[in-house]
Amino acid sequence: MTTTGRRALLLAGAAAGATALTACSSSDGQARRPSAAELEAERVARAEAALRLRSVTAAHGLLERYDAALAAHPALAPRLTPLRHAVAAHAKALGEGGPAPRPTTPASSSASPKPTASPSAVRVAADPRTALKELAAAERTASDGHAAALLTAPPEYARLLASVAASGAAHAYLLTEGARA
Image (cartoon, rainbow, N blue to C red):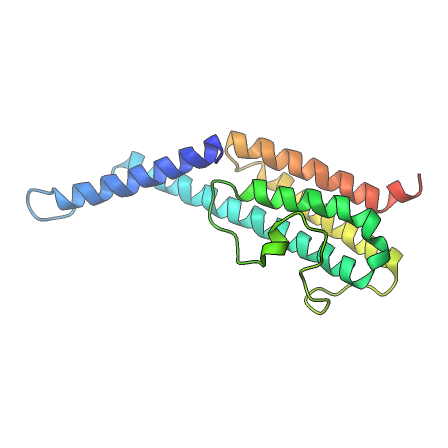
């Protein structure tokens, strides 16, 4: 669990615990309103949890695209498998210390190159070059989303998002321009 994840968990737990204790220990039978600091800690924890969930969801969506492309074009496996491994690692790292990601099959959360998405779940172009361009576009979109999230992310998570965004940009390059080199 990352430091930011522990910090958010502790803040959320402290805020919830303090609220519960003050509600139970009120002398006149009325629940005490949470302090401004407690409300702010709860707001920060909720915002970070929502950011983590969006980031993990985007990474899992990208992972599904890789799986669909691998299922539709097995000949691209030598080229796509290392990138898919990296995306799986990103999805795992982005979710550490945060809310649980949406349910996936065990193979989709691992670095296994085996496709987990059914070909009908994600549309893949019949032409391998077009499929690579579409995958590169998806990488750019995910990368842009991670970069945009930097503005509201806590410092440690922002560093992770920046790294994942840069990696996504490199993947997009490797899927298109890198093949020509």
